[in-house]
Amino acid sequence: MPNVLLFLTLLAGPAAAQQTPAAGHDPLDCYCRAQGRIFAPGETICLKTSEGPRLAQCRMEINVMSWSITASPCPEA
Image: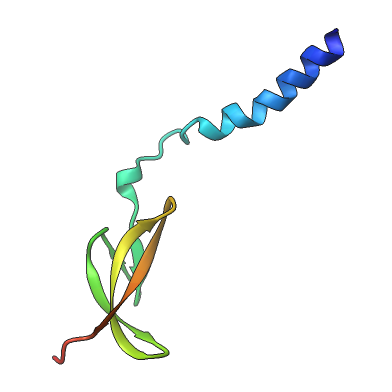
């Protein structure tokens, strides 16, 4: 019986650890980086793509900050 208890403890251990938020991490401190600068969620910039310059928006994608490339070309300056 002790082996079964040890097995169940080991089985539940990693799952419980994955649900615990990282100490000292504030999800509101997330940001995107590009062109040597830091951008807040929701900000848009012009990025070079294989289809030419396109507008990109900083956003959360599955718990990771990422640039979401749009179909909109960059406005002419």
